[in-house]
Length: 287
Image (cartoon, rainbow, N blue to C red; front, side):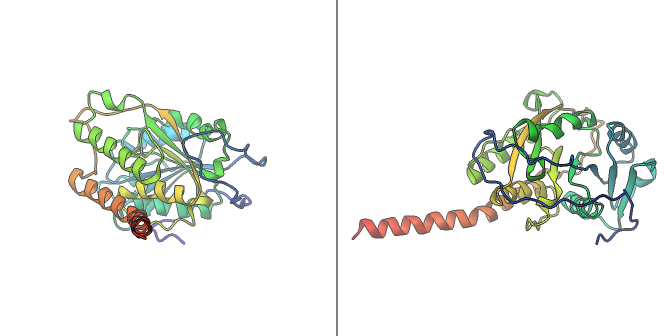
């Protein structure tokens, strides 16, 4: 049950059980054909914290694509929730206090599962993602031959590295995060830091996530790969406002440090296993 100031009702359908028949495959090779069945039920989840100036337009554009929308107001103090037009198919989940982006996403996922949705599309509330890209993002998994109920689809922002308004620290941060993911998982990704994604809700339920900030989105990728889920990428528009119009709650030093400690903590079992293997090989060599 989600703890929040307002609960919403988005309709109900029969829940489909997740089939755990997937396997981890390096790269993005074609997989088995998806299991035939009813089309997955899709909801758009938009975490928002003090985005009063942009939230209404983002929600209207997302709703125009044709899917229900959940806005998770993460303890905003600027009246963000009041700017959302709660028409048919658009509801607001208000959190009493700020939990961080990961906490807001977790609350949205829990409510979406409770309302029997299968897939959640996540996008930011600051106009940096184009809701018009949602249909293409939703078909990416099946275009690779994967079941979308067991696949995470990442949007990768075309032109990010050359966009004139992308700060240099953001380019460096994405490059380092991509490199760390490659070392940790053995897989290459173009954009591990993009929040425009499609998540299979039933598959996420069993992942032992414990981060609540921006590092939540990185942790969930690593845990998903370890659980055997597939991850595919699909190009999306790169939209960056001018520096004077930009609203961001990402704290470069603190949040980058949190992501770095996440990689170190998750890498510990791998490093310990490699150390044990080296010790055993040295022991055999000395015999």
